[in-house]
Amino acid sequence: MDHENGQNGQSGQNGTIVEARELRKVYRGGSEVEALKGIDLDIARGELLAIIGPSGSGKTTLLNCLSGLERIDGGEVLVDGKDLAKLSDDDRTEYRAKSMGFVFQAFNLLPVLSAVENVEIPMLLLGESSKQARARAMETLENVGLAPRANHRPDQLSGGEQQRVAVARALVHRPAVVFADEPTGNLDSESTQSILDLFLRLNADGQTIVMVTHNPAVAGAARRTIAMRDGLIEQGAIDPKEAVATPGPVGVPPAS
Ligand SMILES: Nc1ncnc2c1ncn2[C@@H]1O[C@H](COP(=O)(O)OP(=O)(O)O)[C@@H](O)[C@H]1O
Ligand SMILES: [Mg+2]
Image 1 (cartoon, rainbow, N blue to C red):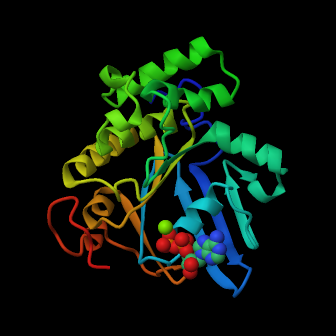
Image 2 (image 1 turned 60 degrees about the horizontal axis):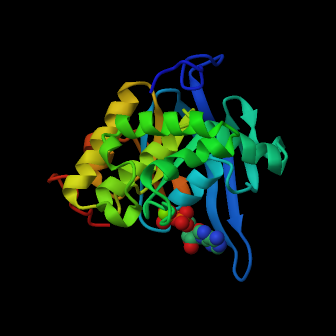
């Protein structure tokens, strides 16, 4: 992605785009679950950060709190210097729509819409004209190598192609941060590699990406990996190579 609008770029006062301090999240209802127990995390602009950890350790909760999807119960989250908890619901929703992109394990494309129509959605939600939305969606599909599939519906695309459409949808409005929750979790090893290559290329162009992954080889490709356990970040620097606990081809599921 380019840096024309400054959202991806170095326009901020420092190199940090997301900052969490003593972040806590408790799920109530039935029994209480302390999903995040005090997370301190700085994410630099332009970083590709991988988050690993066993199922239930709080990875999805952390993404949802960093992106303002869920309200937090303690501490603070600053995104580009803004305290998300201090924004009204409407302002937070608008901020997310403008500054963040999301990729999910299950792709979450709308089945009745074509690829290009799916990719247009964030632009239309931001009030762009249909002409501008279409032009940018086509450009972004081109960037992920799927321009020839623009008019296909999701059920006419492979899993890997659907996820590339979903990545295009996450990028089309040039967000400051892309959050991806197990983006390769439903993909075979070839498609996993293509999504990983795409993320690495986007990141090399300056896109900040935060991704949760179960795949040690995917985590190993990131420049920084943090490991979660029981609602906390495991202490100690993690050598990305250590994240590749079981060296092998990309796509081989980890032991955990
Ligand atoms: N909406 C929810 N309501 C209650 N508990 C939840 C909810 N979402 C997650 N949890 C609990 O919070 C903990 C962390 O979950 P999650 O963040 O989904 O972990 P991970 O993504 O690492 O698998 C788990 O114990 C999970 O059961
Ligand atoms: Mg999860």
